[in-house]
Amino acid sequence: MLSIGVDIGGTKIAAGVVDEDGEIIATTTRSTPATDPEQLETAVADAVAELRGAHEIAGIGVGAAGFIGADRRTVRFAANLAWRDHPLAERLESLTGLPVVVENDANAAGWAEYRFGAATEARHMLMLTVGTGLGGAIVQDGVMLRGSAGFAGEVAHMVVVPDGQWCGCGLRGCLEQYTAGTALVRAAKRRAAAGDALMGPLVQAAGGDGRAIDGPLVTGLAQQGDPGARELIAEIGAWLGRGAATISALLDPEVIVVGGGVAA
Image (tube, rainbow, N blue to C red; front, side):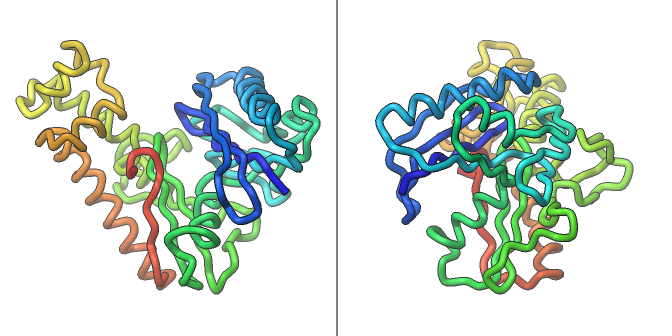
């Protein structure tokens, strides 16, 4: 039996055909429309239609950033996608004609690592996903920890800096504001605007305009060994490590898996 998995990220929609053993058979991507739910749903449906053309599909699993209802059909709140109590599963079912389950994207990634990836030998694990935002998933004794409303694992919104950087959730000083792709780009732009010489290669790569620096540019130069880009990555890595240590003190996981577009 084949299914389609869809990851709705802050900048990219990734979709793939997956078999029961977790093997990815085919993939496709789309850009994430800014904040228009209808355009986003259309982009997801278009990706699904492309993949269905060559495969018989039983259903769709969608990973979305934000607070997903316990029914796994409704996005209760997604700061980066401007969703409030959005019936995502119902909307996608009407567009595709296939059954749809919606899961928090970090929970989906964590369960995949537990079932098929880096945590297959663990019963207790923590997943941290570092992309445009920060996500978390907790597996305790082989069971995904969901909490009373389905929101467990939202480590992004632990306040680590009182009265710190404003977060899209409405709080200040959330961990996400110091560890995710948005934090990476914000720090790079701030230092470039201040004339930091280490940001010179980033500004040059951005066409001479520090305001045009983006996440892929920073991570790409970091992979090439650029000192400024690597320093930026190290800074968010230090914050991520502090957050992981705090969570570990509470949960005592056997394994911590770090993934996501920025971490990759």
